[in-house]
Amino acid sequence: SYELTQPPSVSVSPGQTARITCSGDALSKQYAYWYQQKPGQAPVLMISKDSERPSGIPERFSGSSSGTTVTLTISAVQAEDEGDYYCQSADSSGTWVFGGGTKLTVL
Amino acid sequence: EVQLVESGGGLVQPGGSLRLSCAASGFSFSSYWMSWVRQAPGKGLEWVANIKQNGSEKYYVDSVKGRFTISRDNAKNSLYLQMNRLRDEDTAVYFCARDGGVAVGTNYYYYGMDVWGQGTTVTVSS
Image 1 (tube, rainbow over the protein chains, first blue to last red):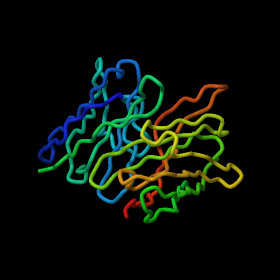
Image 2: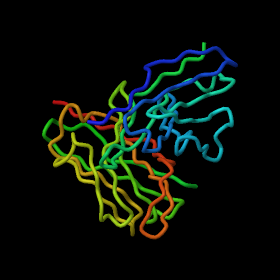
Image 3: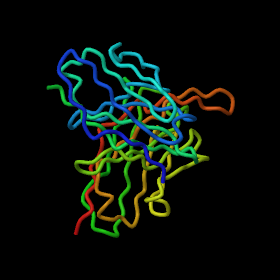
C-alpha cells in the first residue's frame, strides 16, 4: 500500500524556522495537503495543493514541492505552533492517504 | 456557522456493529464530497472512506472494505458510517470531514479537508 513518510519529530526554538518533510512516490504527480492537530482537537487544514494557504492561516506557514518530497515550512515559529502535523495525498487509485505525522516541539 | 457534529460512538464487543452519524449545517451539504477519518489512541490520522455528492461513488481504505459502508442523506444533511464485524483495531476517534472542493461540470477541484467535526469515540472491546 502507498505510504507517505514524515519524520516523527522536529524541534525548534521560538523565532526559528521549522521544516517538516513528507515523501512519497506519487507526490511528483499528486498534490499534498497539510494539517495541524493539537491535543484533543480536530485537525485544521494549513496548506492546500502543495503551497496554497487557506483563508485565516498565518503567513508564516508555507508549503513547497520538489520531486517526490513536499515540505511544510513554519517561519518565526511561535509556541502556539506546537502540535502534530500531517501530510495527505492521493494514492494511485485516487483514495486518500495520510502521512504518519510529525510532532513539532517548540523548545 | 459551518459545522459538523458526529454521534453514535460507544463501546461495542468484537464482531458487533455500530452506526455513526454526522450532522452538517451552515453549508450546502449536497455540493460536497464527504469523508470519514479515524485516529486510534496515540496514533496518527487514517482516512477511512469517502462519498460523492450524490452518493454514486464510494471509496474505502482496504482494512474496512466489506465491513464498513458509508452513506449520506442529502435531505437530512447527514453522513453515516455503518460499521459491521468490528475488530479491536477499529478502536479510534472517528471524525467526519468535508472534502472541500469546487464542482465544475463533471470535475471536482479538491482543496483539502477544510471542515472537521469534533469526533466520536468508538471502543471495540470485550
